[in-house]
Length: 280
Image 1 (tube, helix red, strand yellow):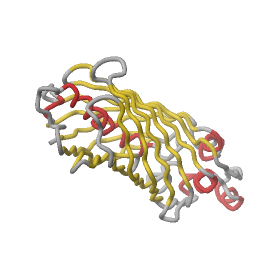
Image 2 (cartoon, rainbow, N blue to C red):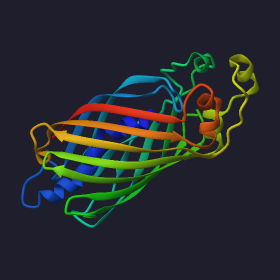
Image 3 (cartoon, rainbow, N blue to C red):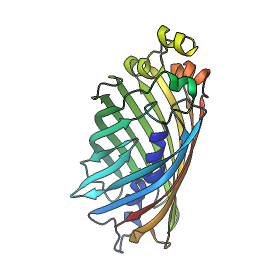
Image 4 (spheres, rainbow, N blue to C red):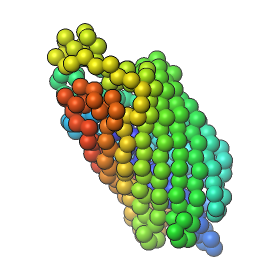
């Protein structure tokens, strides 16, 4: 969960800003005309694992852009590609592959009881990303976007499937400042839920946690506010920008009822991030 927020807070602003800023630059050259690339890094602060009440800091590198007509966008712990060019106005579509490394309970486990059960393996999830966006919703430069990833673990960790939809509204506040409000959720199958949220009888004896058999369903839902401030006051010319974000998520279903959350953690999850990016 925290890795998902990290990527979003660091760069979703740029992904949404690019087409809208392009509209604003009807008669003016923009860094978003043709090929462009953004690189950045920052610091996030969030739960130690999904459902934890211990918080940790972490570094977040990010790369994003549009090269040769192919869009490159950050995703939670990874990236997605978009092979469909966006129009200058109206309705646009996204279609391409999505890749994510999931590090839940694979590192930075602060709770001693949870840590005593050992680290989990890193999952590598691959699948399609699809989306649709509408520009000029309430005024000339805003946009509303809906997207969804469907991914399967190919690394042999949870060996399951995840569906991750999101809805995002983007609007510039002025020429140098823009914000995006995003709502997201996650649905997981039984293999995923069993890997991350079940407590086996053997684990129960070893840790003192009650045994728990997790099943498929929605695992979490949340909201994130992302902002970007161009350091020279003009988003159109690229260069350095400060990106910040804050968010709240609520664990759902068996992800909330698991002892990892209900006994050792908290269903309410808070996040924060700040970073610098450079677009050229």
